[in-house]
Image 1 (cartoon, rainbow, N blue to C red):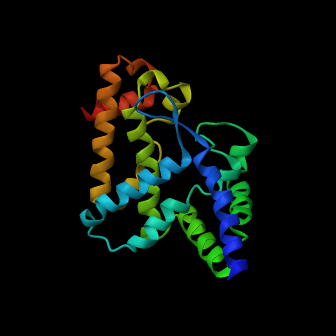
Image 2 (cartoon, rainbow, N blue to C red):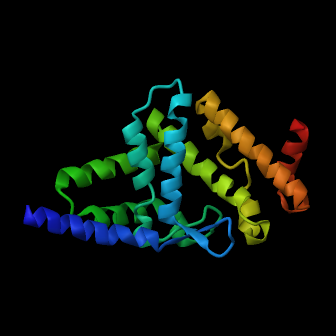
Length: 211
């Protein structure tokens, strides 16, 4: 038992770094950017809030495990924005897999294996649980951006665009409507802030066609 607890403490010490890793997204008070851990917490909160709105049967506990674990590797690799064009973006999956193993290696083998399996399942995005978790991960980014001051946005935010991975949300009618409502808030913000000219032409065209 002493050895197991020592391993658990070693794991917690490594995982704690997730609290210190800063994401690209800013908070509503504009004084600082959010941490990766805060992002994962918000995904869990959203998940618990919408489970009853889904008629598709999902393993709720597994979904919560997914959103808690999905960015764990970033305790070592750090956050890598989607728009970043770099070697670490190109090798993101393999680097995160290595980092995930490093962080969990002190846990009992069965727990480490379970955690890795959950991480891989979300990456593969084929099960209902993974698809739901992926949707939450994608939509939370835009919710946070809409909440934040437009002055914290940079070119990369506009480059990725509100319709990035939009097809993911066709997985379920509720998720589709959820994303569509976030899209409406995005365009309302762009118009209010006079930022329509900063949006990619193709996305602006798509927006105008749906008005």
